[in-house]
Image (spheres, rainbow, N blue to C red):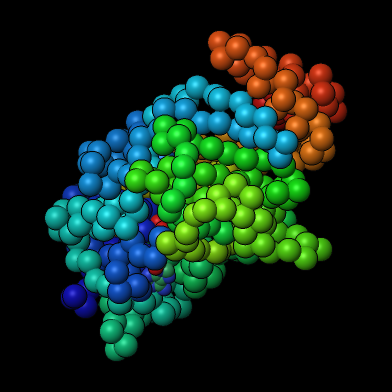
Length: 391
Ligand SMILES: Cc1cc2nc3c(=O)[nH]c(=O)nc-3n(C[C@H](O)[C@H](O)[C@H](O)COP(=O)(O)OP(=O)(O)OC[C@H]3O[C@@H](n4cnc5c(N)ncnc54)[C@H](O)[C@@H]3O)c2cc1C
């Protein structure tokens, strides 16, 4: 590790590794600093991504693909199931290997990758950002740089050091819990989603196959101070009911912001990407490829900023524009759609899924689904009309 770089990237998750790789490929001197001792571990993810979307970032490789899924299903708490055709093949990854491979690609492009290197604060000159203090193997190091890319995930501190507003309201968090289960007998070609507020209040459950009788089984629930049961309590109840013969290979818990992206993602000399910038989908909380896209956009703007010797907040705002052009309208819609969907009473939801389960696969179009929803719950039109009108 050197004492000076053009760009320091904090965090070697998918977003950080892509940003580091793109900056290094453009000829910049890049440090990718990761606080954990092993990149990609422990895994805090259900590991599902769209194949085509992912292929835009990295050539697909069987060594980090656990399962290929051709469609998804939606099951109600009364166990009616609808099978939806998928728009693209879904891959269930081995993130331990995938994340390491992305960091490896950044290193091959010329970035210095260091593990057990925890960013502990920024070095500032007045308001100007001059570098990062890293604790490497327990020893403090000062690293000078012109740009910092904060890719430090949901627990990000870099956003706070940069002075960004980054704490959403409680209602804009999901609480997540997941087991990697073995001895589960499921169809390995389907990603299962389960809804029903008694099973996962204002959230959903998933069962994603990982091959060899294993699956990621988890859930997200809306954070609610009045709720007395934890996400893990709900997950245990579901697993006991559906997979009584399974064994647990690993478990994760965590919070996921679903607030839509930070109102500001840049400061002088600083860009936030991935979960640090709350770039995960405001409906599903999926954030792997969205964060990678954020990393790509941030790297593009960082390269331009250094070419033009302007790392001011004003210049870096180009990154927010790139993001907003690609995702802004969709994210605003999804944010509101989530609020509308979670207001539907459970018995109505069950009835809608039961009706859709009776339809032929060819009739499962968006229009038909919407008709079923409206028939059961006419109020939905009030909630979603502004979205349909693009407001
Ligand atoms: C239970 C669960 C299930 C999920 N399932 C899916 C899914 O199926 N599909 C999907 O697309 N998304 C899913 N997500 C979301 C997805 O995991 C994240 O959106 C994605 O990992 C974000 O990538 P990232 O690079 O921004 O952050 P992360 O992957 O969290 O990486 C951040 C990195 O920064 C490091 N770091 C933090 N602080 C510091 C510091 N001070 N110094 C140095 N390094 C630091 C961390 O150790 C970590 O390695 C899920 C999330 C959860 C919690």
